[in-house]
Length: 404
Ligand SMILES: Cc1ncc(COP(=O)(O)O)c(C=O)c1O
Image (cartoon, rainbow, N blue to C red; front, side):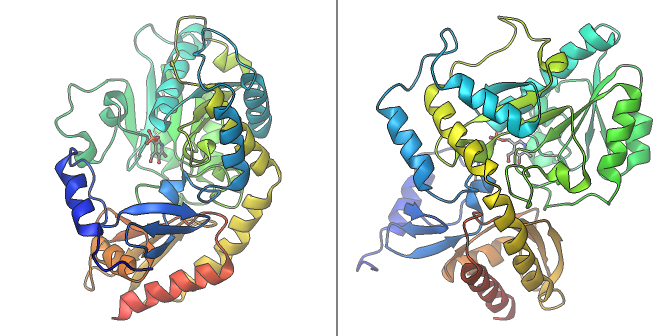
């Protein structure tokens, strides 16, 4: 029901007034949500085609996840890691098994998982591989997005994310994404890790050339370098498999996970690796007050159980084919290119028609929420509970935006 006097403009103004302007949100104010649908403060409904940058893979308020959260809220919410709580072991075991790894280290945000990966790789380098003290280096890719900490932005190639945050953390070598020769050439005796997104999300859902990831896996194995796969956005069902690495049968040495691991309810991230790698950490050497808290573990365990059914991966693969089929039909009709896998797509809008921002705003007025990235690219990442009809609805609105 649309109310007589719209609340949105005032709520947008208030939000702008009381916060740092480190985001440029669409002028929509969400009040409630269920499944793939959002409702704003004025009662207007929108199909969510961003899903919290893949944090909402299971949709808004999935009943099993909400039940797990409610039940845990009524029992125990926080202990810190000074004590062990009764949700901890199940979460760590089930997540480790999903990943096929020995051990899990739970944290909160994606950036913390990446920081954990970097620290563990360096420590492994000094203690196990035997690299020159103080000289460990990590090879990363141009166009990467791994989070916002000072160390992580030190090796970002996006000036917006990096400028004026120096002095920067040394020890990273940036090579073009998808170029195996460049990556191989960057590795030397002090290289401890290669850190990559198997598909670059923020960069516009960039899928590397076939054979690249297996090539990286092989060179890492040959040169005794850890392969760290940042599956924070690409993982947990988004691309039609549990991990995007699976599309090319690649098993990294370490999975970095986040976003959907918290079921769209709580921030939960984790690093999963074998004992030879994660075992380098000893008491007091790394940690986080909230990492692996009871609420996070209760929700996270339920997330892992949802993934263990395979249903969400299947939906993403099947419905993704429908989404990509529909998007391909728009190439040449306002879209220059479409990329992606499963229910994840990067669309390049013809810049002669409009910017990505304009396209997102026009989609919003037609009841579809998506977000631009890097000028004329739009990323679509709907919740994996979206239906065929809803995909067709989103495609129809996009086609209308491109031709109006
Ligand atoms: C691939 C990747 N890694 C890391 C992060 C950082 O996650 P967070 O925002 O939870 O710190 C993101 C966030 O978009 C991401 O897409």
